[in-house]
Image 1: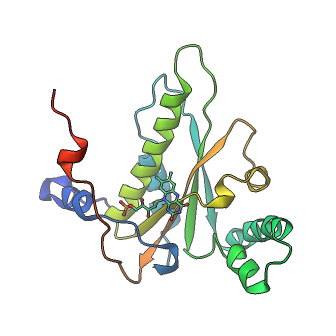
Image 2 (image 1 turned 135 degrees about the vertical axis):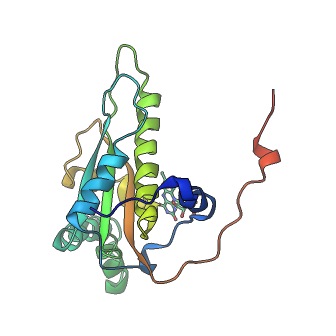
Length: 195
Ligand SMILES: Cc1cc2nc3c(=O)[nH]c(=O)nc-3n(C[C@H](O)[C@H](O)[C@H](O)COP(=O)(O)O)c2cc1C
């Protein structure tokens, strides 16, 4: 597995200061090696998790699976929009095929006697962000999206999500062919209250 760079040289801080999303259309191959991906998933799963419930899991969507699931997305879209032209349906079919790799992070929170579901869901968000940071540290770029199909039960069922599970994010991962200009970031004074 490729070594993650040491934080002592400040590279991680630099990354956190400057990282931004890259749209999936700008994410090219090749994707990571299976060893790199396993390393990222292990890092992604190393998050605060009240009660050690592991209320999240991963779906690795790559290769032919991207188009196969795309057929399901296109079929759901066509059922909802019977008048849509073929170009539009093709766009839906390629939703998960824009980047070489998509990792779906599934939030598997359940009611618990002690741990609020809200905390379990937050933990799934932390998983997504750890995955984003790990991939970017190795020179990849990412886009964390849900889009409409991330909330569509037909698609979630086809992906094998249980009724209590939800999609925290489709993390699109690839090599950036272009990095768009950054978007505006919040001004600290607008979001910080010192007590
Ligand atoms: C849970 C979650 C879901 C998102 N879903 C979408 C989406 O469906 N479509 C979209 O354009 N952006 C979506 N975004 C926002 C993108 O990730 C966006 O590119 C990002 O906020 C840019 O921030 P960054 O440059 O710091 O990564 C989502 C963000 C989060 C946290």
